[in-house]
Image (cartoon, rainbow, N blue to C red; front, side, top):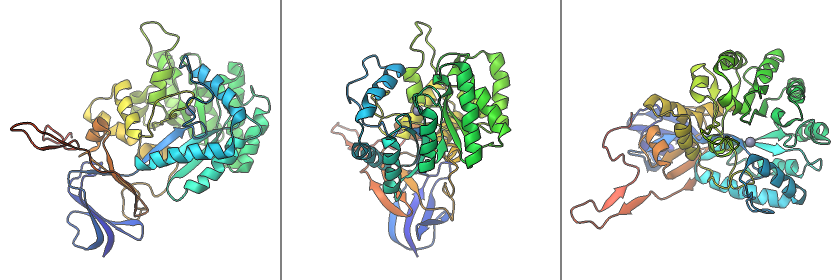
Length: 431
Ligand SMILES: [Zn+2]
């Protein structure tokens, strides 16, 4: 006897017609035609059941602040940073939590149940840190939130940047952040990477830096980050976020860099929506795309995970908390349109992201918590194409969000009365 049986589901690995039995909040059986009863049966015929989406790079303290205190007129990264600097002194803990909770509601409805958020530590008052620590407790029943101490205005460049970051870590922030390309000099950036990796090693914490978010091919802090990772024995616990300068580097240099990153087991976290929007702004034409070398990193065995980064904030006025929108953009910007490419992209917003965050018990396997999403699409390739309705989202065996399927009714002579947008119109599986 199960609490729930999800019947006849398709799984991300391509298996079709599989039953998932759930009891006591865990997945306890995954097989064809489970010969058992359940309190609740959910029919998932022709529907993909996926582990939850994981966003490894977000800014929860800035989300939904669009328009406060004004709009970003140029739409650039630097005006975004300036605008955030104007808003920051007016932030209150209550307003930060309220906006973040609203975003978390949206995230849950889209099956996004694990988020790593950078938290700005530039203002020594650390209202942002207090708010995000409280938020983490509030959402713990439905979202696993990891916090990164992020010195937005520079670890050395901001007054009190060093002290504020240390205090944020003392307060309980989980991960050491950084922004070496925003320090005053390249040398200052490299020093910040060295100092921050040392702090992480001493405190036993992971590292996740905004690294080389620029079109400057000489911005090479990722090289220092990889070297410091090895020096401090932090392999596998360090992430380089953005890495957009790699797009513009010369190929010879990259042929040395990527093996260094692989040796250090660096997690690479590009943010396709934001990178394609904000990079290449000083170019006329041809215009650079500004996303790092996803295919080449994957081919080198490097763990690549995609972040959403921003939703309706000073840097990005768009976004909807949908990691499939992120994956959809990645397919285009990374030009990963082959079938195996698309399967790899789906991993970048699910299993690879979970690995980057060091999540335990993640994935559709017996014994794991029954955290999953049922999508109105037949497989992972179709999910990337359609960004479909999340029919149900389960957390520890409980349905915490539901959306009605998107069905269009037609009034056309001789044509079907209804279209289910989740059914592949070719009639053939996408892989
Ligand atoms: Zn970011």
